[in-house]
Image (cartoon, rainbow, N blue to C red; front, top):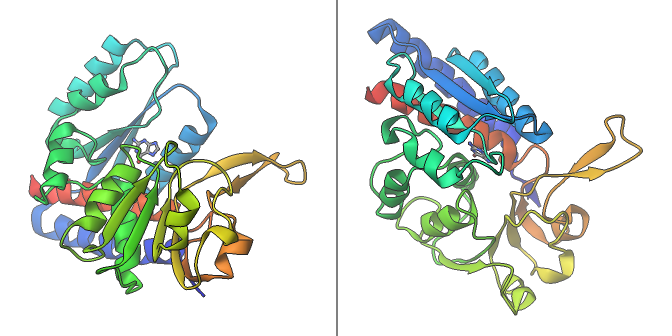
Length: 290
Ligand code: GUN
């Protein structure tokens, strides 16, 4: 069993980015600048955005955190996005999801200038991804593709089951892995909450991407020997034995599934750090494209 080490791989990628930043500075006197908009005080979102900003510093980017109160109106948020769209100093920005319920997420994502949409969530960029045109790939799927590629996991002709059809992970993962590309050329099945014969599907899968958000959902009896497992889940589960009162659990029951796996991502230290590294990669791309 080989651990797909997202922590180590993301560090390698961050070193590559830091080198590219130095070159960009020397050649064009440019420094990539990422802005992140956070609305409200959701604990997990604050942690993720904090990690993204910290990662910027590490690779030599400029970063701006725009921290808005929970009661920010949709109109105010749209105004803030327009400021970022027209600010030449900002190469790319993200609006951390989920947003408070009174804000229309779709409307907000559509307001982002596609050239600065380093999350790859704007419909124009989603369309470009689906057509295999140059674009910003959404960071989590991009990170998974990179991990599969760097560990030389064979995907061509393999049966892949993606569990979850979210716009952020499941759907783009299914599109990317079915395309003619590195870590692609697979036969992909998308399973979701209405899927009837899930165990049958997962038992014949060569690769499983678990992105449904239910802690330890995928268990050893549901997979075959030699399977490759990508665990996208990261849920805070109450745990009184931990100082902070919770532990982080993936969508995969690691103990039983890892025994049968050829490759598996851990939680934490698998997909999560890769997501941040690929956001930086997209920001570097946005800056060098300008
Ligand atoms: N919430 C969960 N994942 C993501 C992500 O990749 N980008 C943003 N903006 N919000 C998220």
